[in-house]
Length: 443
Ligand code: PMP
Image 1 (tube, rainbow, N blue to C red):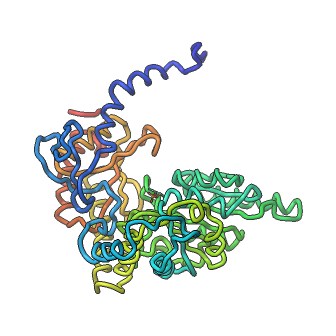
Image 2 (spheres, protein in one colour):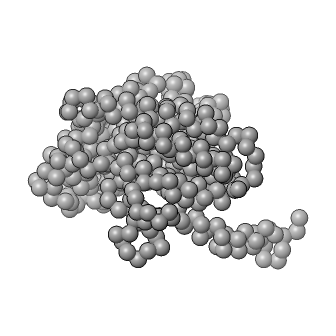
Image 3 (cartoon, rainbow, N blue to C red):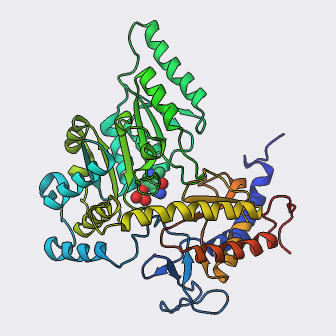
């Protein structure tokens, strides 16, 4: 078909006017809502139509905290109670609120070192580095791992921070369809055979990059197969465990723990400290030689601010609780509760007839809404019933696979989840979200 003179396809202007008129205003209802207080089992959202910042009223005219399925708080460490908070307060008293400099100048103290050690031991690697931002970790890491003579093979659904970091590194990039191990193997084989034709490997390094648990899909990488391919073709394997460390595996040690794969089979285990530990920032754990090199080379250690002491302490104390070194059974109970809650909510939603993506044990539970206008409707109806959720659509997903994402937490009780299921049941009927209930929306 001929394009109009302005070069846009015919539907473009219609969408452009529809979007600002209706959809954007409605989407604004459910994004970037300021919150009040600690994002724990409950969360208080401000009334965005009020000028009073103490006004937490929502659509039903009452002022109440909402059950929180919107924050990343897998193990419930975001709540400001208990030994984590006490230790962090002590850390502020001893070290202040900021390290006031990059790690490689003057800000590397005993707390930084001991936290890295606790983290490395927990993950099962020689050593680890911590950084003040998870996104920044990936954004900066790849320039120190690969260069223009290297090939990075990346899962199509990898997080934006990984894609950004790889691009910045100038490495050649090939993308394989999400979790498609046959396609991955073909790309690796082709890359190596090009080299054999020239009697050497054409790439200085080949690195395969995946995530442990995909945050929009709630599914896992195929770690056993990846490890098998790594042995066969000798590439480096990088796994981002942002959503799996702490939250998955019998001892909370992420996808290696879950699949029974020794951590030595993955070259670089990256993760964030934002989701399971009630902290912030990112880490890289690897063999000593890699960490020694990264410690000197990675740009954030030279040019960027290091982790604040209270955050380091939060990481260290929460890890020691999870591993059972502190507070007896508390860590084990948190792990058991996240595992139970994740399965209980997921199976309940499936039983009600919702279309639920992902693995049975995933603490991220995406429920399909499909059409974007159902996003604000779902979010608002949940809010009216005292439940906070995050709805996700384009650009985090395709436009027509909009979804709501429940982030489960150990902080929730079985009764909380029963309430959520009852409310979802009603909303699902109203919005025609259950399988077999038709595709028209609303009552
Ligand atoms: N990697 C993945 C897979 C993520 O999901 C995220 C954040 N959601 C990040 C990295 C960035 O981490 P942070 O939020 O700690 O900056």
